[in-house]
Image 1 (cartoon, helix red, strand yellow):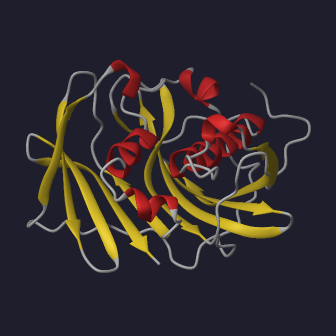
Image 2 (spheres, one colour):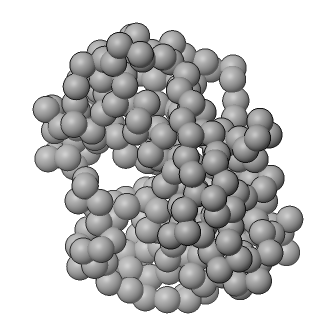
Length: 246
């Protein structure tokens, strides 16, 4: 797709929270929060001519490498939220994208995301084949108090679950969708912490892709202020998640 006539380097998009996106308490699921953020990023890429469809002409796609989300409140069913996104840095095969969610003019979520250009045939990173100089960059405009980081996985972790990757876990890039990792781990968290909105922030690191029929192990390590999950395949860490509690 060509660059849209109304393209702007900062995009704001409204979303109405529907009941399929909500937890039993009526508030937005953390997984669907991530979906809304990713859909907004995708919409901005569409307008700027670097969407999945554009990149597939060169067998490329954006894949998420790291993500930090800071939350002061969650929207609830029927709320209309505004998500604003812009790019902090973009060069060669890497991009840092910022996202914020507001409701009634009040910021409730900030997210910093790190993306890599991935060749979907060679299954490895490579430089972006499309022009991107028309995107104005905002390296000083930060959406979060802290930046994403490398999560330390404690070797004394506990095995909590084993599973096989099913077709329903895969996305259009033919690997496990980033939100699925979060969903698998949150299923093993005390539901009271989730329903009472005790989650202050969380970070995700994506190291190795998972494919159909892979067998994985989910591990957990607890502390007073955080829960750290990791997902391994054949004893190699593919994903790490840190949940920070209020």
